[in-house]
Length: 347
Ligand SMILES: NC(=O)C1=CN([C@@H]2O[C@H](COP(=O)(O)OP(=O)(O)OC[C@H]3O[C@@H](n4cnc5c(N)ncnc54)[C@H](O)[C@@H]3O)[C@@H](O)[C@H]2O)C=CC1
Ligand SMILES: CC(C)CC(=O)C(=O)O
Ligand SMILES: [Mg+2]
Image (cartoon, rainbow, N blue to C red; front, side):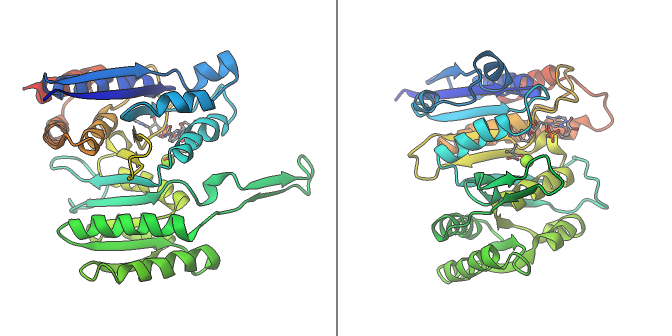
């Protein structure tokens, strides 16, 4: 039976261009010959914005909807006011395609350096809610430009939105050997949102008696992520906390250059989108310094999502072997790392 993948590719800005090229290289190298790969590249990001003033139109969404999945590099550029692309493209797309499960695995692979003392076992997944919280744009500013300016950014939390992501996190914990789930929030202060999350977390937990649960305030979670990262198996949290703790999670488990993510629409009603956790890194863009591993591992998540488990595992093994071999060697360029990974996955 012939199979096919129809992929939307959005390199975006800065290092997004460089790392996506490597992701595609590895994707082509790993797929069996009977899988037909079709890709369509989109120019979203600063280029499109400067040329047309657009970030993401309804017509764009219609076109993107036709694909099986989306591979994104990163968006955001110093030439565009902060927030225009982040809200007008990235969040708009995540919300439009109902990417409510933002999946961010962290695993410290053998031989990979961590800034933490010793070599702790790090193998956890953050399930970050992707469509609500303080990221919905529910706010405003009054008396702008005066000493009495007031800005609000209201966190939106619906029982529907919380329950579906919490249930997803329980199911993931149930399927993992340790069967542990931590809710991370701040319910001692954010009592409205926090208690809704906690109540739903406890109620849904009754359906998963095998899963061991704990609750942790987000500030304490940042301590334990550094001092006891082995404590975590699955973490479920809201959009903002999840954004912050997954950069920390990346830093302790090999660095931001190896942190992958998936913006999942579990129902399949819309294509899911896979992207590195990092941004467009203008500080190193165009210098061949970006590590493409995060994007390559995001390609593995994409393949697993589409049912290509063997190929996903091959990519993960290749990245793991590549990282283990780096120790004590001179740094390679983005392209050189991509070439080495392509050889590994093909062989
Ligand atoms: N999903 C997305 O498209 C995201 C976009 N952004 C946007 O990206 C722009 C830059 O944001 P920053 O806060 O600087 O975060 P960033 O993640 O782009 O960079 C933070 C630091 O990590 C380094 N870094 C990032 N990726 C790397 C890689 N693959 N290899 C080696 N080093 C890497 C950078 O050089 C920088 O020192 C902003 O416009 C921001 O809004 C930020 C995060 C996610
Ligand atoms: C730019 C933000 C909207 C995205 C971000 O930092 C993230 O999803 O990790
Ligand atoms: Mg982030």
